[in-house]
Length: 231
Image (tube, rainbow, N blue to C red):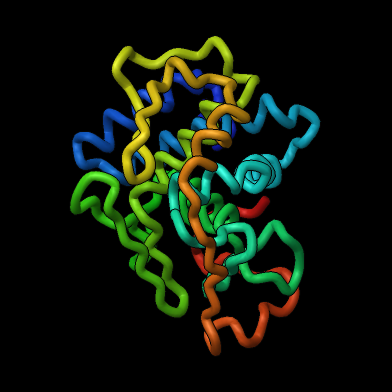
């Protein structure tokens, strides 16, 4: 039997979220990230049923919810405008550096979905304390914060197509200072309500500028350089 990447979306979104959180709590961040990507995969397939390209609908869903994802995953960074100094393919078009959605799809979703190891320098940051995280960037390498997992989970949870999904009672998301706790089973499909809650804490956003690292944009369709599959 031949199993393709799209087979991963057959699992219920709620189950993918449950597994992501359980794996993260066991310290298995790469496995947790894969399950979080599966939750986005399955959700995007329902939100955009007419888009056949997995990569395009995956990245489209994240971009459409950057206001939620960014605050939950990379607070303080303008993920909509920031481009990363990594020469991988971008679904934004030719001669474009990848944005955060591209980075997650081509490096994390595709690589791990194929059962390959992440390239060095792309591992998620390690959780040092509750809600404290860090991001490390150098030319050709980006370590996103561990919170990326929960930013993806939040995006999936609040889509109306997922109303009726469930996780075990007691599974929750934390955010902010002071912390706001979101019991996941109370937040399925409540995108506008979550946006209102996030707006209660003002967060200035910075668009990252990498100087010489991104001075010369990729020319033509950028090869993935071993970081996953095409769109």
